[in-house]
Length: 331
Ligand code: TYM
Image (tube, rainbow, N blue to C red; front, side, top):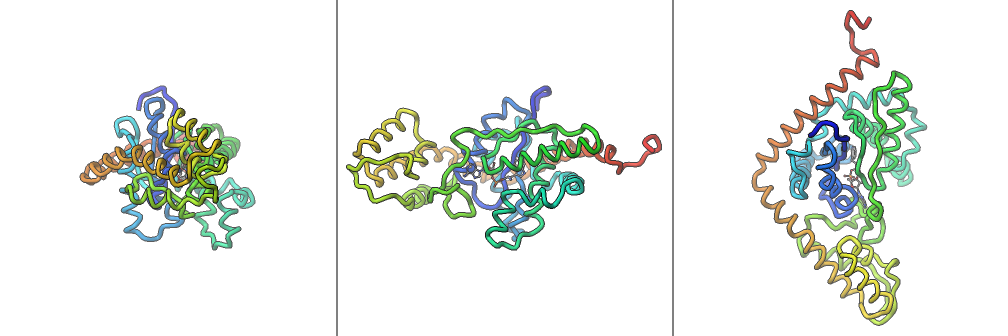
């Protein structure tokens, strides 16, 4: 990580296989920006605990996300890759933020409100989710956070935490900014809602051809025939074409939709082919990396040590400013 560059941080939860929404909304940016920023990309295993209670599964998912990161092109020489739990300082900092924020403030968070609206019995971890996320971001003096639109409010909360803390104890945290790519804000799932592991509407990034075919063929479409004129903006298949076609192909497809001359079956077949062409090299790379688990574990270990040292350096200053450390000169 070169000096003088701005700091980028982001992470993915190890709660299942990443999908193309995670990829286009966030993960691809991790790779695209790794030369421009001093980058830290972690596996949010503490956040995963809000839903994952099976230790074996959590371990496997965590290793899988590490392999996914490498497969999409994250380079450990350029990007500090680590497990969130290797920086336990974030939980300590989250506690300090907890003592500054109010319950009504956190009750306004979308994720909490959604869970309550579904009558779910929400655990305190879900309620605290944005506080821990603020700690992840602020502990590393991060400038930018590439995420999908669903995380925008969480970055806003991180800014609020920084402001509250700085106001109370003195200037110590930077104000981070989200990077949300226009057109990739909310990648739709096979049912048209946001693609999400919670909705069973995903196309996994590392899916086999059969899985891709099954997912795409399941996309509901209206009853128009091949010759009917169709509005591409109302079709979920077309929405996904936008991610996998170049400008020329997309324009041609749009014309066929608008004039009539293409059926949904053909449109889906083209989409399957394009997704497969795009993801096949990633899949192949992933399979190779997965053969050497030990190297991946060593990389995580090394990344964890470096991230922990960095977090600890910041926390020493934070503990001092808050009044937790005692030394003769500071009394
Ligand atoms: P996770 O694993 O739920 O999501 C990982 C990233 O994928 C984005 N994303 C999407 N983007 C566009 N369209 C979609 N359909 C879609 N679905 C998911 C998410 O916005 C996210 O950027 N809370 C984070 C994990 C986290 C984190 C952090 C991120 C914990 N601490 C600190 C940044 C900084 C999350 O949602 O992970």
